[in-house]
Image (cartoon, rainbow, N blue to C red; front, top):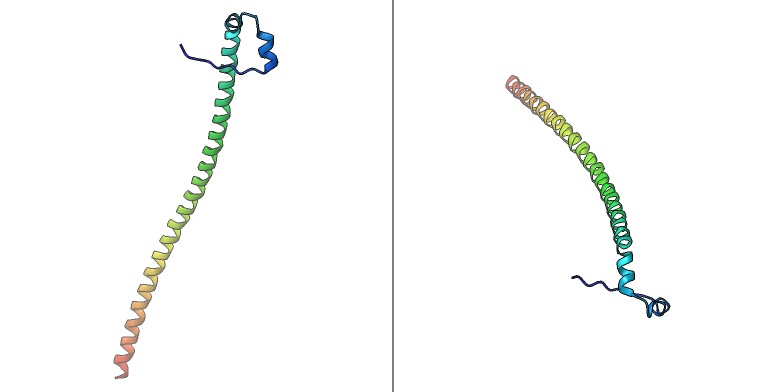
Length: 105
């Protein structure tokens, strides 16, 4: 059997002197179990609320990161397209320069 430790003030201890403490405990055991169950439920509810808040925060941050990533992908695609345009323009300008050099000579 598990051991339970009950802490009482001096006044309550003196008031229990001479009474059937074990009997009192048995009488109140059902109430005590109900109280403990209720306290456990309250604790778990609070824990659930905190976890839900954390989850909501993580979801919000995930949304921000996803949005940032999607924007970065779009920017990357734009930069790649711009790079190609500049490459083509550079090639065209080189050809023009070569043609001018050939015509000058």
